[in-house]
Amino acid sequence: MPPDEQFSFDYKWDIVTTKVQLLATSKIVKLTAGEWESLAHLKNIYTQNVFHLPKGADRWSNDLYFGLQRIASLNHSIIKLCTAIPEKLAVTEEMLKPFLEGNTLEGLLKEKRLFICDLEILEGLSCKPGFTLCVPIGLFMINKNKQLRPIAIQLFQKPGPDNPVFLPTDHPNTWVLAKMWYNNADAAYHQSLTHLGLTHLLMEGVTVATHRNLSQSHPVFKFLAPHFLYLIAINTRGLEILVSEGGWVDKVMNTGIKGMFELIQRGIESWHLDVDGTLPEDLKRRGLDDPNVLPGYHFRDDAILLYHAIQKYTSKYVALYYDTPEKINGDWELQNWGKELALSREQGGVGLLGIPNDGTFKTNDDISKVLTCIVYTCSVSHASTNFPQYEEYAFTPNYPGMMRGEPPRSKEAVDERRILASLPDKPTTLDIMVVTKILSGRGTKSLGDFEVQYVFDPKARDLVDEFRLELRQISKTIKERNESRNPPYIYLDPEIVPNSISI
Image (cartoon, rainbow, N blue to C red; front, side, top):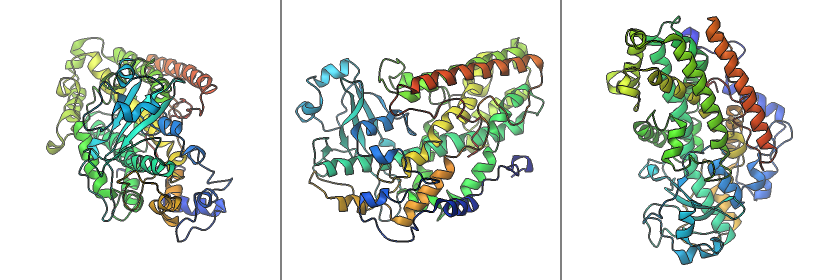
């Protein structure tokens, strides 16, 4: 790793030392071995000072909270508008009648009140020996109170007698167990793609290509540099400790690292900058670009404010330096950079799909589109998927990265012992608590407040000041929104969003 990419002395991310410090100051009950005696016993391990009771612990079995996990938590971009019930989801009108509040399925589809989450990308993924990963489909409905609720969960793609559709009217423990197995699959997607693959790893390639092609005096380098702070350092440390053979992922996720990297490959090969990396287009593809569709989608409602602010700042900055097409065509550093971003990984490039004109920049809009995506991914996208981790994962029944045993294959009643036996044991739970606590910590400055100043051109500095002013206004708007949200969605307040992927 180049010396200038290392952590600075006062931002030394050392998981081993931090773990020891956390455990020493937490006065936590020593979790050395054994299984959980009850769900109440599991709640008792949290302390006031370091390992506070995660938000998910009080609401984990609640259907409304399960709905919120799809739209205002760390894996917020799988859900899409349901325009037709897929054949592979074995639901019927009669089966769902108790949850439809007197409506018909056809009526709800027309009113845009049904939503679906389909994790088919997980099909056939490797798992650790003795572990299973579901490939679920969840059907959700906006009820008369404008709240999102689950109305059906099918844990595998192919309908059949050993793959029933679980419903909120099933035995409470059976329904809870189905939701836990759904969330276990959702967690595999979250850690592999939403978090690691499509922020950390995707942007590392962009960082390397930027250093290889743009000189430090290039305006685009100066614009992007604050958003690459510590990215290579955190990825190097993470790969050594968390995503290594026998490391954290192997201990706490059903897929282990083999399945994780298979999933990353699948996700990156289908990721397009002009859709997946462009928030308005991503929302449009999922049928969620209308703010009146899917009320309570706090991620969308807050992220779009930040996206447009970044886009405006980027467009004005690009216009400052590229006021004629000739300047774009003649900028060989910029053009080489674009080509390397689009060049396949096999040929030594970053392999990004959906770059305008396969990496040949022709207009200001072409450049702005790419820069907006990079800044948004390094700041907003990463913050939204990283910082809620402790609140979601640390109480394992709420969002279990690991589930032991087999998922339910029938709707028969299960007891609490079955739920407890599915959860990670005590030492694994402690590992999950410690690492998600570290990952949820913030150590760098807020978006727009740069650790290192690269921009000294007075006109460009005016644009940075303008950007900061808009972010302050957005922060105020989000704080006002959170006064009436239950629970509040704090993760995209610009005061909390860092410039870069530094944790």
